[in-house]
Length: 392
Ligand code: PMP
Image (cartoon, rainbow, N blue to C red):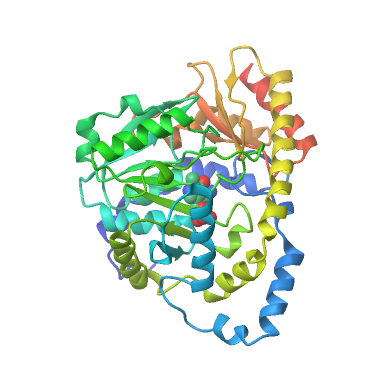
């Protein structure tokens, strides 16, 4: 083999492919029942509606604009739709200048990391938290401070004023969190917002699952309590289709302007084509009829998985009963290491994500995340039965 003629940067060298990711590669095999992926159900994708939208765009003058470069901030009608929706829902008076369209909310996390983290910058993360968020922030080499959570979500009483004053931001997923499926309680939302205001702390509120509330009863977002202290991240991945790679950032204009500069350097703008399609799909209120169908589908699968857990798991195993979203968080007896259990489970054609991946510091090893929306009822029953017998 010829010697490499490049030298990786320090940042590239620190990026490691995780052992768990390697094991999970086999879950792409069709014989493996996978509760591991965080993918939305493809049966929720509005294929016909999107096809119609594309046809309508191509039958109009919009086709030429949809195929052209566009502004970094995003397609104006889509930004207006987003801000009108959020203003109405959260009782706010923000303007279109508070919105930046991004290439999935994953890009929002990356741009925020670039804008707000230097080597050693303190950032607060709810724990456990979204693995993809940790991976992104880690590139910028922060010092993580973990804030523990329980069944009511992140516990604001564990956030000290000193940490709140000195950290660059606090990253949280208040609705049907990844990986726990938990929702932050109303009282804690208020308390967290008060602490943020008191200590001039920026809250990064990541909300891709907010619309997947089975009862359709959203709690107010953190941005509604502390609009000057919150950057809100939204996404169309779980309510339209993740392949469109469409998300948005809502925040104070001074921060948005900096993020626009960073985004320009990263990818000029989010594809005009998908922005036009999304706007065409949603502009006449389509989501109001579409989202309840997704909620129903996910609620049904969730109930079914909960029933199977009840039926097969030993009494020493505990889990939450999500009120929305795509995940169940399972606690096993302390002596069971779920990363070791995964290797065994994969040999028996079942997969999940071991909990340790979701901790910034001091991982707990006896938790696992189950995703229930891409598997059939037969697979759920078979998979849970197998997992339970391995745990026993
Ligand atoms: N945040 C959280 C909490 C997520 O779970 C995900 C994806 N699963 C993302 C952000 C990224 O979503 P997207 O880039 O598709 O909008």
